[in-house]
Image 1: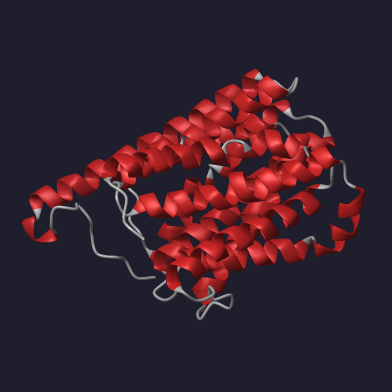
Image 2: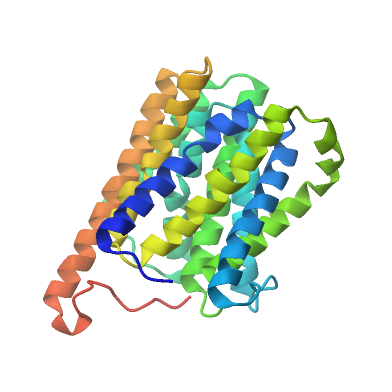
Length: 305
């Protein structure tokens, strides 16, 4: 498969983020249990991503990871997608997506404590700002369902951090293989609900198909195709379209509106995430400029953990 140009890669990333952002409104519109929605969504996505890999490689993807980190990435991914759907059904779409995007907080803390990664003082400040933003989400939710939804959304961010760290330090296997395995695991979690499928409204069946193909499977294919042709900072910035657009689609399609607390908390979390990405990029650029032997990519050697 021919690699895309840089301009095409930017378009692929933008399209992926916009397609991902449809998750909130589609989940809200699906008239079924969150576990059932997450299960069928992931089953369809596994077929889409697995089919693409089989066509590209001429063989089926590896469903059983060969390493503990491979399994950790798959389990982290399964937790991310299942918990996100569950949270979206219990709390606002804005809360669910932005709390999931708090994963850099957990990645930074775990990377520092477990892997010895250096965190600069300014990064600790940004992480503290992100933590304040997370607390603001809980300030508005006084009902048990709202509090539970926010807690599950935050857990989705933790699961995403597990997946991120596992993929970062994985030495064997492919990230896409881990995604296929993770989707299969997510599908198995709710397979007991599949007996309800024949009784679901036609609109919900169509929504499930859109969730699996358009919202989850296709965006990951676009994202992976684009990733090798863009800088890390471009990938971070463009994917931030998702948490911004997600609640907008929900607001246009339903009567759900983000609260003042959600807007304030979301602003802090997303601003801190973007600022940290910029600091990371500038730090890598400065390091590359100071050390010509590091090459033009501005990268550093992979840390061990």
